[in-house]
Length: 416
Image 1 (cartoon, rainbow, N blue to C red):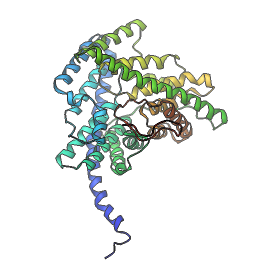
Image 2: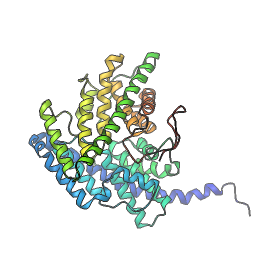
Image 3: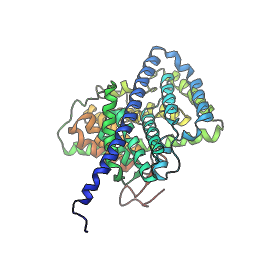
Image 4: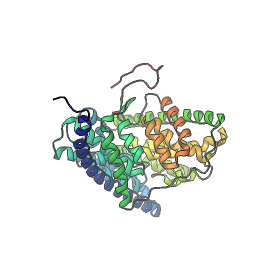
């Protein structure tokens, strides 16, 4: 008997039901983990501000976290790159301990004054928790890929309060030049519900407001493209310097716990020399300031260097919040040069440097509209795409694969 014209659609119902249930569980786990991470980071930031002397213990804290990872966590030390590797080439279940290890490492890093972010932690927790379901229910490799992607989307969405960007990030971050649409349903559901779960726990995300979004003009578009070039080169510089610094530490310091110890000493020395702790921690207050008033033109350089020293030497956290800081302050600095509103370029830079460094232009432009409103969409889209193009082959995730060249004139189409 020939199949009904509607048989394919009817077969979708069990598929939808299955992945709806899986995505809901992943979302509850990831959203809860992100909520507790945000509460922990808020406590760590507040405690550091009240007890500045904690900064002097940063090398000891770095050594402690480095020793714990060396002794008990070598198989999870690759962090986000381990998740991406497992999606590309599934081999073994992500150990559950990745979640508590990176949670603890991120809190300690912020408490004692390293310059790191939070997205890496949320994504790793989301992926590790999701993969336990793959182990429990004996998923095949293809289903395991999908649940890991859903965990990544859920972690990203819930830590930033951007469910649509989180859903796209989980699809876009794996391969430059191609999204994996087979996981679009679980990624979307997990991202949306994880964001709601974190809000139910009482999370309050920082509000960033662009004060002026001008009407589209020829100069406005040109200025945004020029800024996009600067954002792309900055994202490229960040990624390459971070990888170079990490390689340098590993090459010259064989004993892993000594790397963050020495990195901590360098951060303390730099903070003492400049007489300011403006470039340590998450830096959210400075990001907010970038939308409100002109800042020092060198702030983005300071944050870039402090973050590279922190991440390159082995402190745990993420790169994305520092990239937001770098992009917002760079946009703030470019605004008077390009005769554009500083809050607009701060917002555009916020997402565009991340777009270039992570090679995720679509997720970044959607994030801009979720955070700042749909009116910024055209400016954000131009800046994110140009930044993505000018960041070249660089990227903060080493395991990210290249499906095709970024543009038709670029040599080579497939890199692994």
